[in-house]
Length: 320
Length: 314
Image 1 (cartoon, each protein chain N blue to C red):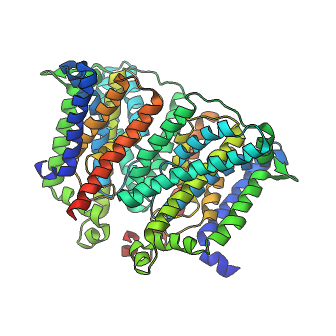
Image 2: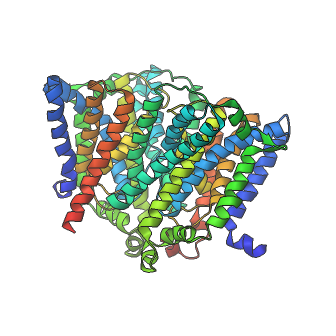
Image 3: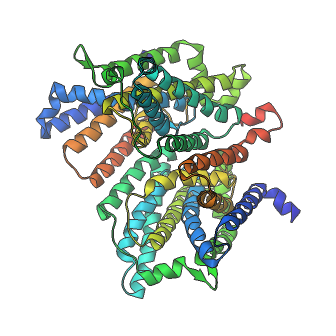
């Protein structure tokens, strides 16, 4: 146990912070730790959580994805067309939404790998394209999502919020097995040192392509879940999510220089960020001062969590 | 200035010429002097922001605090003018510039001393500034107005050219000389290439980082002051639509997002190109959706062109 904590120090710190914040939130909330309160909290957290997962896959290979929000907007608009009607149709619809996200990610990956352009610039440009397509689909917010399906995804299972069940599935059903596969290890190898990864015979092009496609898949999942929560399609949602997803992965201990961190950390970071915002709401701080406090807490959290200078043993290490 | 001219940095200028001719085939009024000088005037706002961003990107960092430095300095300057006190009115522009420099120093503390990645630290600074602005103005559009000086800076003419354009070019030329002829400029680029090596060769790297972020902050602040002069007021989140076009302008101008390579000459072309592209797309009355798509595709094509050309040489 102690060994595990030592080798996953970043995730453990993020987890402890999250538990502390959550207990503070449930303590100050007038209705306490009821299923209702937890469900609303978990839904908000999971939207950003999935966006942070998308960002994680780009960041772990030393990239960055500025199109996360745009992919969410696009898939949200797709979802507002296809999630209505027969059960089979809706099942295909959900697959189509995630596939649309994957396609966006694949496009990013192809341009980055074969066009040899920096990810930050490519995704900046493709984000504009994705938002454009989203606007073509939904010039004004509208459309609908089947309420039964939306309820099933956003309420609770036996008192446990469905969003938390989905989070658990993402961690235990996907991430823990995935990180042991060749692709999972390849992501870390590529992020740590592209040259070393290439020289040990890893197909770096394929890994990078896969990483950005996975980012697209999770962006699609985030857009899908967002549609379940809001039950409409809106092309204008992209702005906040991209930047928040970057803040979330950093809070969760994922290093922007690549190769360090995990999906669990990214999820924890997103949950921390959303819990801070919820905590503000019930904290009694005047509402006009809340954005300032949110910013201050974000800056403090990033300064403490991201400041490698505190851990450096000599002055040269900080320039690594 | 001349030394920073490369084929990459000439690209956006070709783009501008192409846009003007292609556009004038559909809309002859694009070739009129009125239209073109108006574009120069508007390009100056984006151009000033991109000038600051170029300095930071050459360093190998990025400044995401541009939107609220811009908005903050606009709010600060218009509310100083709004008091009606002549001394405070006179101080509006210097105060806004000092505000920009201060935020730049705060950015520098996080990046150079605490070693936090600039991408998240400047983002956090941006959200703190947003919080301050909301607290100060109550979330409404701030009261106040712009001074005659600010109006002249944004909308005045001198010898047939917009003053905003002249200010932008003067600052660009000054900074370009500073970058190419002083040790600071060399250190800036060498940090962009390899910070460790620069530090080991005895350069005080933190002070270079501080100076670069302070210059960028002042450029954003000046952009904000002039934009407030243009609109005759400040308004909430007036800076948000500028963040991504600013980065795009720098990159199209041939400056490497990884730092070290590039210069201000290309950035001027990049800002002109993006302003003209946006303007022509709205003159053509294409709806928002296609405007976004075309904008993204053209930026991608320009970037692909740059790398493909390099591939052919190598």
